[in-house]
Length: 449
Ligand code: FAD
Image (tube, rainbow, N blue to C red; front, side):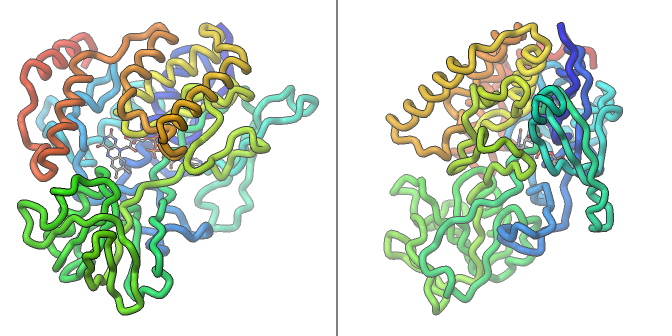
């Protein structure tokens, strides 16, 4: 097995487990993290960006999009890494709930970091500014990785560079807002913001709010805001016709189809002809993949939120295995999937696992694109693994010779998803099938606590 010198970008859940797996496989790892601690998304901050829509490219970037009231949307048994269960603390401290608050997830990632000695390989406050393949004659075709010191007083003088055999990109994809296009918005007099900059509901007190979106954040944030706002009008692309109108359990929240137009007099009209005079539009419309540091001469690009071409969402065929990505899929259980991807990458880099030829990997990517096209699925859904995440994880497990997803994890995930959809207000405090919980805990007993 060959030991490579590997740069990992980001010390969130993906970067941490990638570092662990790479180290375990015998590689020499350096993790570059622009923040001052581990945890990525799970490092909550009340600070928001000065541009509430988050579209000004020169804005100072705040990484995390967490809101203060956030509790996980997965049971902790499902959410944790495969061999490092996310259990309540034995001394009763912390937040023992099955769907804990965000502080508990950060504490878990900090424990994970300590348990596997990862602090030693993370370089904090180093923001990766450039990643490019060196010319063959320069450095034997290795990767030149450049970084700046995040807190250098803005002077930008601290750019440094190091050469690596391989780079694993783990920079997260919930920081760069996607905004809905709204006809007439330029003349509409109200305020707009993106959920990236939402922390607490107070600023919405007594206002009429139009909130766009229907994914997990939209569901949580609309309910958070409804506690103080005069009215909350949710505009959604996907809805059942008979669910439109006032939402059960609320006397100030309505569901509408998408916005048709925003008008100069402050009115917002919806596609079914309904309208409201609104004070603020809140875009809970998701995020863009963003790799401002990658210089691949177009070999890897982002097109309508498709990162490609990537073999199995991980390796660009032309640069494999020397460049890879962990954590691109969405609508999947993140941490265990990061672990599966990381084991595969680590094994490929050491030569323990072989990849198909570049041509074969390209064929596989093209087949996926053709399949999505034939099904009428837009490019921006390329990395949506909702219906195939466990099949995908099991494929990765076969490659790396590791354990496939546990049956209880699959079933508990499905059960919690059904409950979330049916009862978004209360699903976190409902019971989960006891048999599944016992199976999970029997499995956990195999690991040292
Ligand atoms: P991140 O956690 O975003 O980490 C990326 C890291 O890269 C950051 O530390 C960042 O500072 C660093 N970085 C970025 N660019 C650079 C650079 N140029 N140089 C150096 N460092 C850089 N998942 C769940 O499992 N359960 C949940 O309940 C859940 N709820 C969520 C709620 C919200 C509002 C959001 C936004 C996400 C939620 N997620 C949830 C998904 C969550 O993003 C993943 O769980 C996971 O934290 C992603 O990890 P990551 O390492 O890929 O990215």
